Length: 80
Image (cartoon, rainbow, N blue to C red; front, side, top):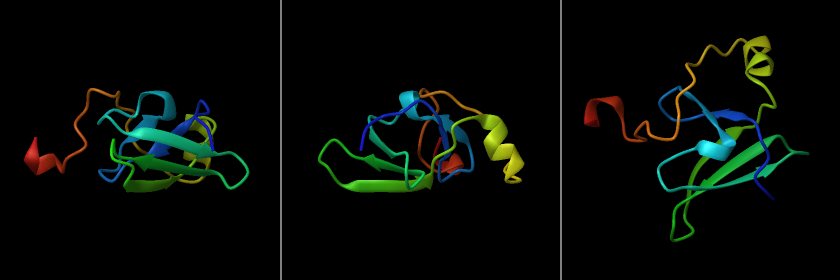
């Protein structure tokens, strides 16, 4: 798997770019499976998500997630 430009939904319901996921995560994308995996620095799998090439592709599936950048914390919103 490799990093491909695109989008996914994080565990807070935000849309994130695969190239700017934040949280010091390493992102891998499987284009065939439409799968995004986020790994910690130590290699633990931290999050799995569906890969979307564009935000419009997400919206066509009925997903309305605000786009955030990598500086947005990954913790639960009540932890910010």
